[in-house]
Amino acid sequence: MNVVFLIYRRPDPTARVFAEIRKARPERLFLVADGPKNEEERPLCTAARAMVEQVDWPDEVLKNYSVVGLGCRKRVSSGLDWVLGSEELL
Image 1 (tube, rainbow, N blue to C red):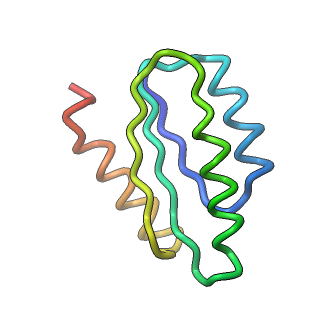
Image 2: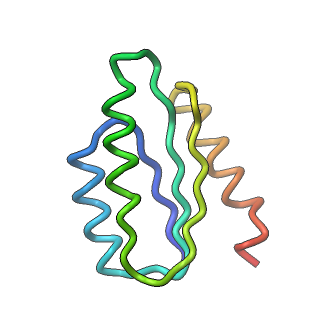
């Protein structure tokens, strides 16, 4: 089973969703994260990313983290393009 998890700047909801993903223990976990729009968002984005770094089951984790804020439309579409174009899906 493959799971795609899109995150941004909300560490608490990210942690709750990640806890459910952990229960499922997917074979492949694709992490897609948007970057901060400004310096005030940087700590929140970093904290959300830290939540998903806690993979404690044997699997493959593939990450696509944006350095800058692309916005929901561009980040979701570019992230899903990355996942769907990934050779790891084959």
